[in-house]
Length: 77
Image (cartoon, rainbow, N blue to C red; front, side, top):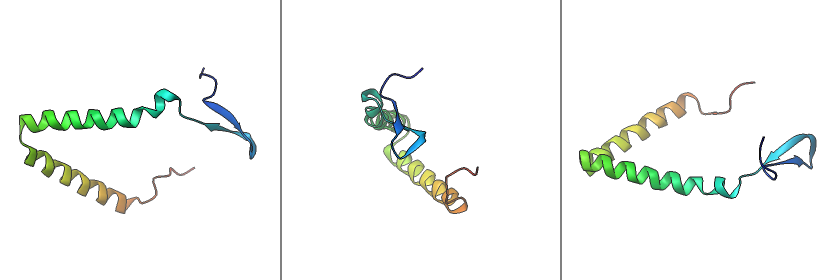
């Protein structure tokens, strides 16, 4: 069961519930960015900063191609 305040009734739709981030949840993006930077630094130490930049570029290229194939990330109902 969730903590109070996470979900509230939707004032525009009596059937719906609005979901809000908690204080802890709001900290997640900053933690994720910091963790990603730490991982990249460790990988760069194992290889080189240029290798990690090439990897990033390649992954972004693959992501771009995937988005072209399926531009709408909303699942079908």
